[in-house]
Image 1 (cartoon, each protein chain N blue to C red):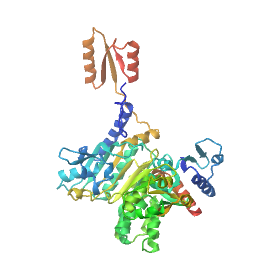
Image 2: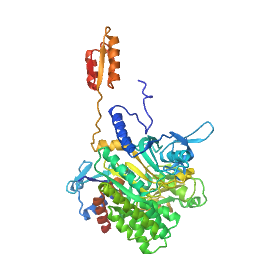
Image 3: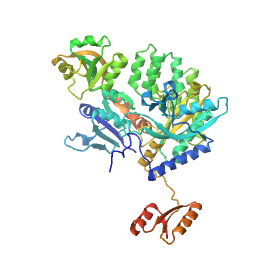
Image 4: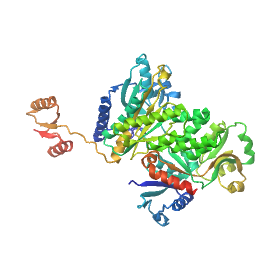
Length: 391
Length: 211
């Protein structure tokens, strides 16, 4: 066997058999759920101009993009993320639209990360974007869908952690933290690096009280009580509004009966400038990373010339599947009614007729010469694949 | 209740960590048996698991959630650059990451000259020279006895951990610049931090009180 040709590059893989069936089943369950919230399909190109995914807009470093040139010498990139593409498409086709737009996408994203990390470089994602809606209801809708998505896949034990970037930004504004230190603090707080946060604060000329407040942020995660504690630290409008919004979102989630899945994390700040308001992640056992990530990005569309608020999330399907497997949650696959029609030299024509009838009735039919593989092998083949034999 | 798993960097760090954990009432008797060939040790009562791993692998185990908590040197965290929460400075295993070399090399660090740097920590060295000193350098990755490199002419300087500096002195080398201070850190997986918030926070608090 010429075995040099059978390999796939590191980070990509073939999908087939039951594994693929399960993947498609999960995708269709999620798509149906999202569809019921009024989201419409959108498909954007697999590759676009590099600029769409770089600079302020990008969520991954540009060295981790798959880049190549077209014949005119333009730099192109395989999409690492759908959101910029959808923002671009919306700005282009719905320039004047001011009513809410609901989009849903499914497809692969590509991330040219370092080798030997045990990570896929091509990932399937399903996600939603709700554009032209800056309301609290939009935020609630995102969280509700996130919870329902995970439940629909059979997960029971999971947590949605919600933060609001406005809280941190409001505090920085209130206490006059300059941009450079804001970035440093943001990174440390996001990593829950308590002592690193303290080190930066100690180098700043701010009062001890303020230092104490900022050094508490990495620890401000947990139930709704955390928001009450946070409230005692703020006097200014922006940070206070941020907390009010979270409290109010929680109230609505409580009324919808999903409060048990919700926790808060005011130290979740994301490294990227992309997000502007609420930010949320879904965590569960069986994976070291969040399975759903989302948030509000009210400035992204203006990069493409349309002023519009937007919020969205994306579900990482490959990761979700490995979580389901590790938590031993079964994805039931419906068996279609299937027939194996065996013919001999006399009734070959009839076999085709019969197969056609079965297929028209919405069932599956496979035709085979009954002597081609021998009786034993043929019967085993039918048994393995769940075919009923017709002679 | 799920197990909480600790990954400890082999060697002194692990011993110190176990000592510290014992002070706050977490013991693992199984681990004290030096002759055992077991890889994983369990404390059934507290639902804890422990395993020893090579230092650079600890952040990997924690990032993927194979371990919930890890204890490892800051040097390893910086070099591996994994996505984990870095929640505690445990204060032991203190040392410094330094640029070292013969006295004559000091001049080479002042003029953005292209020089050769031998190190076990290519990422840390690169970050220091490129982003802090803005000096373009050739980095040569070695796996041990880094001090040899400037002596035999493989590189002008080295970037390495300095504890007492005696190996350097004995070989006619000295610390030329300090990159950063180092010590043992406790890291936590992001998902574990949320899913097991109560137990992990309690652990962090009681260790903090001991430090």
